[in-house]
Every structure is written in structure tokens, then in C-alpha cells.
Amino acid sequence: MKTIDFYFDYTSFYGYLGAEKIGALAARYDRQVNWNPILLGIVFKVTGSPNVATMPLKGDYMLHDVVRSARFLGIPFRKPSKFPIGGQAASRITLWVRNQDPSRVESAVLALYRAYFIDDQDISAPEIAAQAVGKAGFNAAAALAATQDEAIKAQHKAEVEAAIARKVFGSPYMIIDGEPFWGADRLPQAEHWLKTGGF
Amino acid sequence: MKTIDFYFDYTSFYGYLGAEKIGALAARYDRQVNWNPILLGIVFKVTGSPNVATMPLKGDYMLHDVVRSARFLGIPFRKPSKFPIGGQAASRITLWVRNQDPSRVESAVLALYRAYFIDDQDISAPEIAAQAVGKAGFNAAAALAATQDEAIKAQHKAEVEAAIARKVFGSPYMIIDGEPFWGADRLPQAEHWLKTGGF
Image (tube, rainbow over all chains, first blue to last red; front, side, top):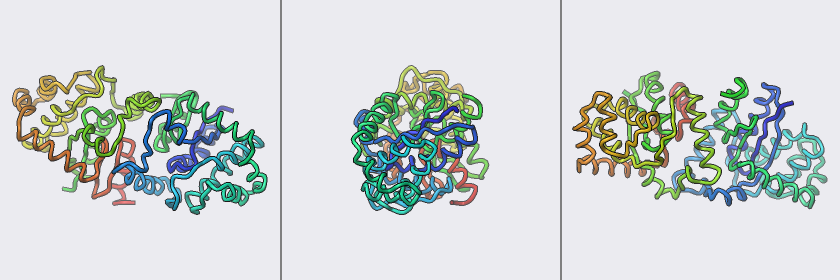
């Protein structure tokens, strides 16, 4: 089955919006989503990108825009009390799920994202992240253990480095047959690409 | 007639894409476009924004994205030999047209943008910018004089400052009934806003 490589950071507003939509998009074109959690803090050191959320004018706009974009896309959204947060624990749990059963990753990703962006749960805390996937039917104790698993930590580090080597610099970032699409606002172009086989 | 305030920089890829689309969008909803040329160099000093075009990874992506976005939108585009350029001359000519007859500004803006982004003309040169609007039916000699007109220079400076005071930080930036939309990729949301009266 052909794939869509989907890169995302758990603290990314637009990563959340993209995650809510990419599964259905992929299904419409018989694609499988490869879910790849990354850490923008590490990526931004490479690109020299500032944190947009704290930039004058642009930061305020971005928050306004994400709330409106969520409404536009029909996705529930509430600004978390704590932002940004570190995505390490949630990312490691994601890899733990993916290592066992790739077909269950989407439900874990959405459980984590929704805990953060709808229920205002601080998923940077390993216990909170583990509880979030626990409610979605995963083994919460094993998920919590995964956040401290050295092999998974190393796997995540290597995957973030591999993402950067693939020129991934933001979230969400999608690669479809080698073509890169950055941002939830590029979903229409991604869909047109899938529909036409490239344009 | 109700308006759409459209802010743009002549060296902005996405400003060009937005300019090619905003007129028809406004017409569909009986709106008049207020065309406001700004200078991102000044704006970026306020926001602390780096020049994305020169950022590692992101800069390369942006150029790839604008070419694909132009195809997606059905707009001709060729990367200019010289980029970025200063938009002062083109902006002053735009204000000179607007001061005389706001209904003719769109044709002047598109003549300038197309000279730069299709015909690879360096419109930072006053003579080239004046020629571009000359071909579109404006008085080229008067346009050239406008680029050196102290009153127009002062008007432009004041308008860029007013834009920043209105929190404009990018190009294109549209304000519709007080609602801000940044980027050519927000045209679908802008249209939905016009269609629904806000959402």
C-alpha cells in the first residue's frame, strides 16, 4: 500500500489540525499514513526559526488563526493553559504503539492530541500522556514505561534526525511520493496531488 | 461599498498570488479592494521575523511551494533572477495611481507584479517600474516622477507605519470587517467569511 509520511509535533496547533484530517484523506486515496512524531525545538535549531507563538504581531495572529482554522475545518479546539510543551513523552508512547501495531497509531495520536488541545491535559507529563492513551484502550502502565524506555528514546532521537535529513522543518509536514507539503493549509494541495498523481 | 483591505509587498511571492485572486473574490461579494503596498523589510524589524527565503530547509521549501501553489491556483509564475528586491518604486507608483483613481489601482498592481514575477523585470528600478505601468496604459513619465515625489514618499512611509499599527506583519494580509487573514492560502477562509458574514 502506498503511503503518506506525516510528521508532527505534539505541541503544534496546526499539527493537531492536520492529524485530525490526514487519516480520512489517506483513506480516500487508499494510502496508509506513516505517523512520525518530531520535536520542533530540535528542528528549529537547524533552521534558525524563532518560535512564532512568541513573535510580536505574528504570535497573536497565529492563535487567532488556529482557532478560526479549527472552526473552518470543523475541529474542536481549546487553547491549552500551558503552551508550548515538550512532546517527548507523547512521542515515545506513539513510537511504542507504532512498534507494536502501526494500524493503531492514529487512535493513539488523536487521543494524545485531543487530551492536549480539547481537554487541556498537559501531555508533557508522562503520567498524563499514558492516561490519555489508556482511555483510548491502550495499556496505560506499559505506555508509561515506554516513556522511560532507553531503546525508544534512542529510536525517537534517530527518527527526528532522519526527519531533518529529509528536510522536514515544520509541523505538520507531509511527504507524498517524494513531494513535500507543509502545514494543515496545504491539505487541499495534497489532496489535489493524490487525485491527479501530481500537478 | 464595503471593502477588503489588501496589504502586500512587491517582493512577496504570495503577495503576488493573492493579488491575482483578490479582485475576483471581492467582486463576487460586491466588495471594493483597498490596495495597500507595504515594505516587509520595515515590518520584519518590528516582528523580529527572519527572511524565510534564506532560512535553511524552509527557504528551499518556500520556493518549491510557491511554484506549486501558482500551478494549483492557475497563475503564471517564474522565479525572478533578483530576489528579494526593494518595493519602494513600485509602491510609490501604486500610490500615485490610487491617489488619482482608485478604480485603476488593480491594473497597475498586476502590471507591476507580472513584470516582476512573469517577465523577470527588476521593478526595484524606477525606470523599469514606470515602463511596466506604461505598458498597462498609464503615463510612464508621470509614474517615473512619482517615484521621486516627496509627498508620495512621505505618504508611503506613513501608510507602512499605519499598517504596522494595525498589526499587519506579512504579505498578503487582508482585513475584512476587522477580521485579519494572512497569506494567499487563507483566501478560502476569507471567501467563507464573506459568504457567511463571519464564522
